[in-house]
Length: 368
Image 1 (tube, one colour):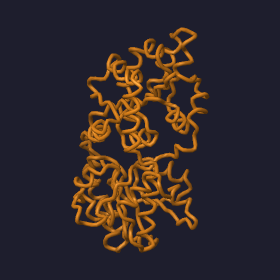
Image 2: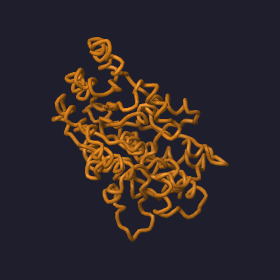
Image 3: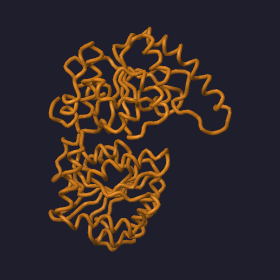
Image 4: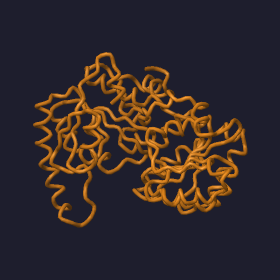
C-alpha cells in the first residue's frame, strides 16, 4: 500500500473484506474505506452451524461482489487469495477487471490453488510456488512472477546506532529470537532451559508473546546483576523489530513468509524452526533457505535448549557466518512491494506488465 501511495499520482485504494478477522481495526486505522461481503474472512473448520452457513455465504457473496465492483469500477484488484478472494476473483473475471493474486508460501493453500487460474497475473514469494499454482509453464509469458514478500523498509535504520541503543558493544554478538504468532512456547522453553549459558556468550533480544513474558521477566531477574542487561525479553516488538533485525547477528525463529523475507533482506543467517502444522507450509518455506545455505533448519520436535546452543555456534565461525549471510542476501527481495506495485499499476493502466527480469531487479531493490 505504501508503495502505491508513494507514486507521483497515487491511485485511490479501497479494501473489500469479509465479516470475520482483523480487517475493521487494521484497515480503518490505515485510512482505507472498507466494504464487506456476506462471507467470513476465515472459513470454519469445526463441525458447527457455520459449516453449513459458510457455503451459503460464499454463494451470496458472488452477486454481492459483482454489485460492488460494478459500483466502484476498480481499474485493477490485488488479492492474497484467501477464502474471501473467491467471490471477488469470480466477479472480476466476469467483469473483465484485471487481477493480481499474490502467494507468500511455497505450498499454497486450497483457496489460492482453486482461484489462481482466475487471476490475470500470479505473483509469488518463492519461484517454486508457480508450479503448485499451475503457472509453472515457462512458455506462458508472465504467467507467474517472483516478487518476494512485501516488508518494512529496513534501509532507514543504521545497524551501528541500533546496536549501540541495545547496548551491544563492538565485537559482541546479538541473537534475535522470536516465533511470530505460531506456537512460540517451543522457542520460549528452549531459551529458558539455557538462558544463563546463552547470555554468557551473547546478547539476546527475545520476543516471548503475551503468555511467555512474565516467565521471561522472572528469569531475567534470576540472572546475575551484571548480566541482566544482556537479556531483553519483550511481548512484541512491532516498530522496534526493524531495529532489532538490523542490529542482530543471527535470528532464531519460525518460517512464516514475512519473517523469512525480512531476515533475508537484512542478510542475516538464521536458525529456522518451522511450525509443524498448517499443512507443512512453513517446512517447505524453511527448506528454501536451508537448501540455499542461508539457514540451519531444526525440526520443531527436536528444538530444545541444547539444540539452541548447538545451533548458535555458527557465530563462532566467522567464515561460515559470512557464507550464510551472503546466501541470505542472494535470496532477499527488499523491493517486493515496489515490484507488486509495478505489476498492479501496469494492469490498471492497461500497459504491458514488466517482464520477469525487470520485476526481479525491482524486487531486489535495483530499480524503483
